Length: 92
Image (tube, rainbow, N blue to C red):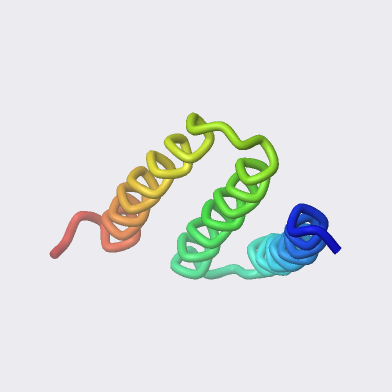
């Protein structure tokens, strides 16, 4: 087994796990009635999508995909703060 074949097998396993996690989070987001849980679940959905994009970036072997993932990490923190402000209605 070559290192490339091993990487392909590992990336398929990782992709399946991330997709399963994404589907579970989506199911929970649809079935919950709490706004705070939906905010947390939307962050989890965002992080799952970023993980899937990173899996694609490993196959694509482009520096641009990793930069996009870094920007997604920065903006993910901003969306968490925005959701927190919405839920607390601006109170500190």
